[in-house]
Length: 89
Image (cartoon, rainbow, N blue to C red; front, side, top):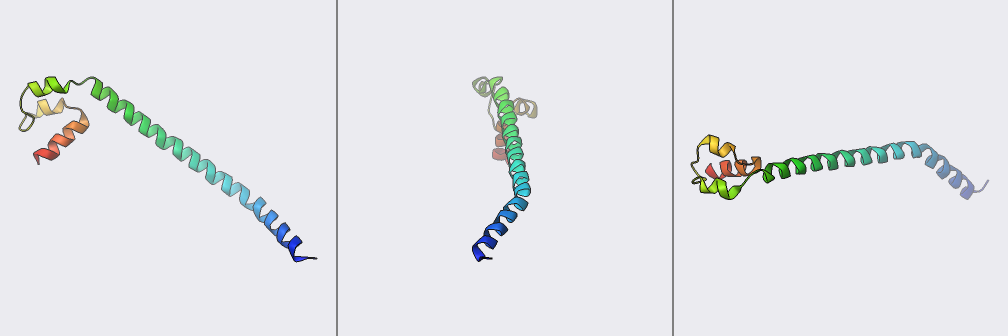
């Protein structure tokens, strides 16, 4: 029995054994990627809807941004509201 045949058979057997775990891990990676892409798409759509319904120029004509009353700040989109609160601090 030559060494090359033993190595070839051993590698073939190892490949057969490792095929299922590798395929399962690849599918887990694909599903995780699809989940993350879905989360990003949902977030992007929500942010776009929030921005489309808001007129910043009109909001700024209503008075100063710093020191604005809480109900006026609440009308800002979420990210702009967070930015204004960080600046105020």
